[in-house]
Image 1 (cartoon, rainbow, N blue to C red):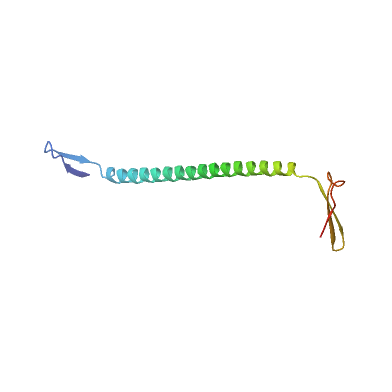
Image 2 (image 1 turned 180 degrees about the vertical axis):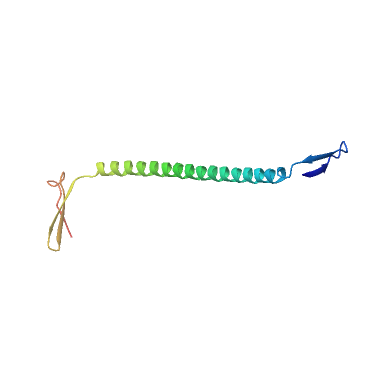
Length: 103
């Protein structure tokens, strides 16, 4: 038993000896639980930030892909004929109007 003096009333109170270790254990356990919950919360926060950044990057890639598709659809069809070191580039739509380019 542990005897403690109550300062207000001047009485001596008796506490069981196991109470102090039990209170220490409960305090340590609660601090560990709070730290574990905080670490878990931080990991969730980081994961959500990564997912958000990946979504933004995906949207940028998709918009860039759309721009590339638009440019590809606007280009004119071209035929490249090769024979050894000679290449002839012919614009299919304007092949009757212009001469082919040799290089």
